[in-house]
Image (cartoon, rainbow, N blue to C red; front, side):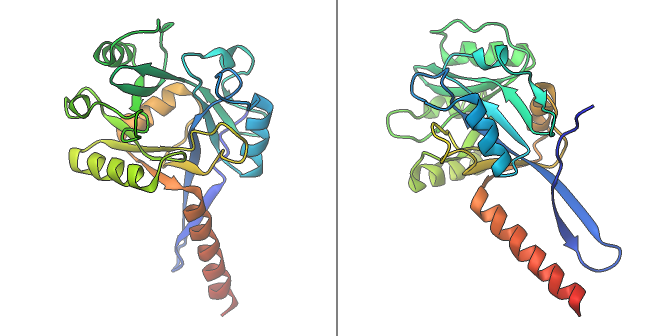
Length: 238
C-alpha cells in the first residue's frame, strides 16, 4: 500500500526530547494540456513535483477533470499524491473546486456553483481574488458563501497577493497557495502547507474545513528548512 510521503519535517525543539513536526506541501493550482492555455503534460507535472520533493499536486484544468481519466488519483507508487479538481469560471470570478462533485455544466452563476459544491461535500476556493480583470466580486467574498481564497497565487503581482492576504485575514477566510502553473518552471513556486495527512480528495476537503493550513512561497520553506538543518548540525557538533 502506498502512503503519503510525509517526508517534510523539521526540528521544532532541540532540547530533549526532540519533537519532529511533519507537514505536507501541495501545489493546489496546476494547469495541464487539458487546459487550452497550458502546454504541461501530466508526465511533466509529476516529474517536476518529484524533483521539488512536493508531497502532492492538484490538477485544476479549466472546466475539465479529464486528467482523472488518465491517471489514478491518490498516492502514486513513490507516495506523491495526485488529486484532480478543476477551475470553474463565473461572471463573479473563478473557483478551484474539489471533492465528490457531479459533472459541472458551464455557465452557472457563482452562488449556484458554491451551493452545489457545498451540498455535494466538496470545497470551493476563490482563485486569484484581486487579479486585474480576473478577480472575485467583493460582494460575493463578503457574503459568507465563500470560505477559502488563494492567499498566494504564483502568477499574481505582489500587490494582488498582499490584498488577498489582507482581505482574507480580516474576513476570516482560509488562505490557500498555488502556483497557477502553465509551465514546468512555474510549478511548485507556491504551495499550501497542511498539518495532517492527505491521501485523497476527501482528506483535502476535510483539511480545508479544519483550517490547519497555510499559503507559502516554496522558497521561504526551503530557506527555513536549510536554516533549521544548519542549526541542528551546529547544535549536535557541540
